[in-house]
Image (tube, rainbow, N blue to C red; front, side, top):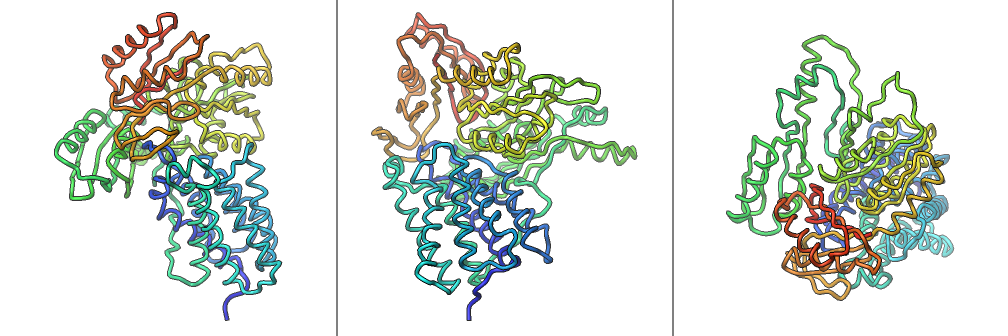
Length: 576
């Protein structure tokens, strides 16, 4: 006779199995990207979200109760939520646990009500829910549960299996609901992630052999960094030129020829030392000491998927040795690096006891050394390094808020996939007024800061900045990672693409031509300013030549050229 009820111990196993199932498929889910750009991150975001909760669940041990389990699942996923898909997943889990937390055992009717509550909570979290997404898949499962109960189903195994099969069917229909999915030939990536979670959970219930092991005391990348300004840290900085020992394996998506290997090694040498790059037939083992692990990771993603990632803060390890040698018990504080590194300008962001609280403060998400310097020069107090492929979590944003000594803190997500996490952080912030300016691009963030007026009230500034960013059109130039057809444009792997606010504006084999046509697609009759931010792979001379090309074409516009240093995108451009 099969199990007809689920207790806390079984639910814990099901949740951990679901998390592990998602983790095992994250790279594949990343590839289910509508746009063929090298920054698909849905699988990563959902995995980091659920693993944040899974670590808290694993830490509960054997004596697990429903209340503590629900708290770990809900709280862990909320704090770890990254990207839109991760936030929606956290809201599904939040709604589900809200219904079951007072129950000792879960029956079919209770589970049905919990599924319904999960969907209700997730839909409320999204301002403009779109069908053909993870929300649709979740709702499909909840509706199937209701139908099964109405039909009088009593067998739990049959109940769960039927819901699982139906969510797969709903997922298969998402291309019919969203034309862009059908054109790209993919199902919704967030929906696929949810299906993998459910599949792992059902497998655990059915007694299939599942690995429930989840690290308890490590972050998603297994690393932790501490900021500070003590004398010993300064000594560590002097002794160690490149602070992060970075290791990973590239699972190649095409043969790694001699030219590719030499180019990759040359790039690693430009950002660090102690380089080991050993290529086999289909994998490359990489080791490098660098001050920006993200740059090494972004470059490696061009050659294939990554695994066995390990990043150690050598300055921190050296500092800890110095503390032990001196017998010092000084408390070391600072944010953790959880995929998206949280950094602060030590001169403005570190809060000391004798500082008086200010009226306003700013936090901005930024990718690239140059972009971060621009924000700092405009008075932004705290920079969260992240963006595409490295969406900061709700917890990352909350930690940044703690470091800004102001009554009102404005957050600039600068990426449409970070806005939900920022809004979630605002809901969880009690001591300060956290206002999220929904900037979808870095140029919008820069415009928002420029239009801040200290003499205005928080509400007036919020309204003013939101209004001003509406006048900013943004275009980004990157490359295609697969053949596809988007917006009726045929795209080949390796083509350069210019992506605007509403879709692809230009495709071709010449980067300057694509960037030029991208700007052309954003221009309006009253456009006055064109801003160009060149990325880490564009040389200054190349950028200057491109600027001259645009200045010649649009002589009546002011043309600004600045170093952004952003990965993946050769140019980020805006028109106002």
